[in-house]
Amino acid sequence: MSEQNDILFRSFKLGDLTLPNRIVMAPLTRSRSSQPGDVPNELNVEYYRQRAGAGLIIAEATQVSPQGKGYAFTPGIHSNAQVEGWRQITTAVHEAGGRIHLQLWHVGRISHSQLQPNGETPVAPSAIKPKGAQTFITAESGMIDISEPRALATDEIPAVVEQFRIGAENAKRAGFDGVEIHAANGYLIDQFLRSDSNQRTDEYGGSVENRLRFPMMVVDAVIGVWGAERTGIRVSPTGSFNDMRDADPVGTYGAFAKRLNEAGIAYIEVVEDSFQGNLEKGRPQQVIDAIRANFKGPYIGNGHYTADEARQRIEAGLCDLASFGRPFISNPDLPERFRRGAPLNEWDSNSFYGGDERGYTDYPALGSTSQS
Ligand code: PHB
Image 1 (cartoon, protein in one colour):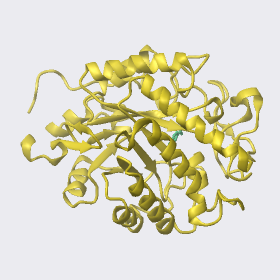
Image 2 (tube, rainbow, N blue to C red):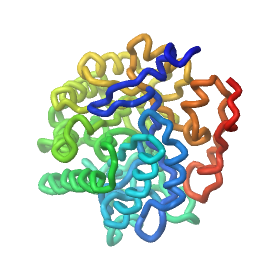
Image 3 (cartoon, rainbow, N blue to C red):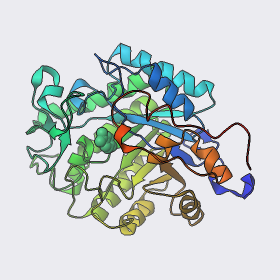
């Protein structure tokens, strides 16, 4: 297929950014920041620089505050050292011709008191411990059960919104092109959104409108820093990872999409089929349709897409762009491979989380001599 005719390489206007292709690098936790302080480092610079051919890189989930941390070695965006570390990354990606957003993250209940400041109890909308959720607190700990969480008091919630606002400001100082709000995969915002994890009886729980209150406060705060054109969001309406479920995903996510549309957010990225588990087999088309009907802006589809499936779904209007996770781990030059129809390197899941350059920056790119 010639490049002009390959829809993956038709440029796309995302907010006020022009992307040269429709292939987005999904946010991927790799747990390789420097200690102490969860600071991005030279190895992380090399990893992102290698992947600058993506239409847009969405950098890994990054805690907006010490309280927002849930795993060892994930990076933060709340200290000056972290901002400086990230600045090296954004500079390298820009010099290599790429664009990069930061994913703003608060894990809520998916944490352990030993990862929390002063050994505090992790916070959540409700004091409900998800079944089977695990984390690791040191390189040696192995996977261990998360702690029993406590419910945030009503008057504590504005300060958590403020954590996101400060994270957004720090991301700006670090030179990102924009930010993505992490509202997926059973972390704090998702915990407020879905009916099973949010059993609150105040104005932040109960009705859909109430469950959307905290998520929309975060959206408004981040848009206040970046503008709607540079703010995106990620959701996982039927992801079961971290013991999540909702009584009515079509109702919840249809209403959320409508509010996001009113806010003018630049895009919605939807985890349609999570590698960590989905409540529905395959893609939840009813929920996807409800989101598409209510949110008129760009839609990034995610979850087990092949290149051809991405082309077909874009052609059919089911999504505008497609994000790829694991294929980007093992193929730094994934867009180029898609363009040429070249074979893909396989990923090694043993080196996803933590460790060194092995399984991180040592996956080979195609040779410089073109076979096409
Ligand atoms: C993980 O570290 O396992 C993880 C982090 C963020 C996600 C999903 C999984 O959104």
